[in-house]
Length: 129
Image 1 (cartoon, rainbow, N blue to C red):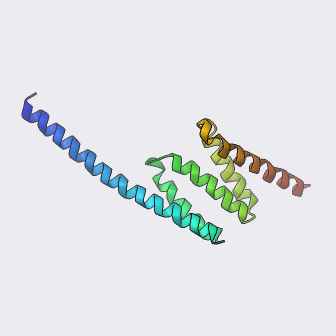
Image 2: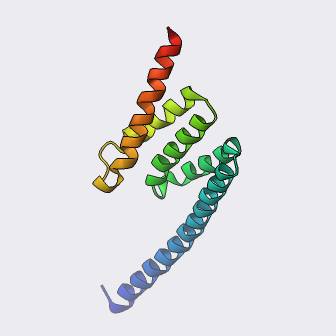
């Protein structure tokens, strides 16, 4: 391969990489905004209004799959606050399944979700009798 061809390929690859970085940077900016809006709505006592902002995080799960699991945990917590046990159970279960093999530093989040899940299931079983 000639030096000119090698340079062209290198330059073309670098340009594509920069272009991809710009796209991802824009996506991550929207992710941060969605997470912030959801957190602010939750803290202001509006958990139902926060839910759609967590759904937007799922759009980016191809970019960063960890966001999907985190959104499931957050949605479980919000549905729990709303008293919607079925939905909370569904999202806590999904989160726990996704992070079952997580890093040790993240294990407390999984344990907390599993503990809350057990309480919700127990309450559901008790109501069913």
